[in-house]
Image (cartoon, rainbow, N blue to C red; front, side, top):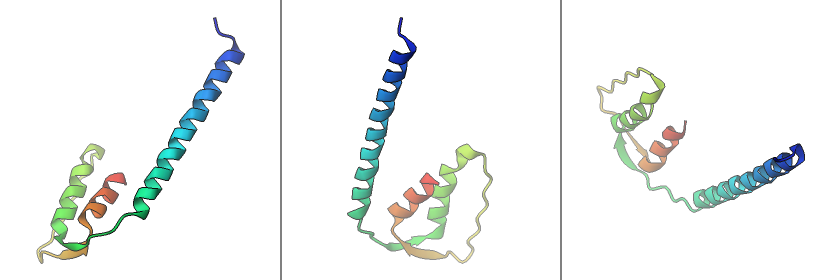
Length: 87
């Protein structure tokens, strides 16, 4: 049977490894964003809203969006969609 000291040592070691993995992931993520080159194009606001609505379904939100003028915006569609999915 493990002693409290052995369990504590194992736990601390696991926490350090987890921290280092998380730190490495964050550094990698930052390096990816530094190389990000936006590619803006004209998209319909309806498209952006629909994708945001789909990612919000699990949150039990009711969203209503009306765009009778068919407004379009210039944005990098992939960046805009990924940004909303993280929120």
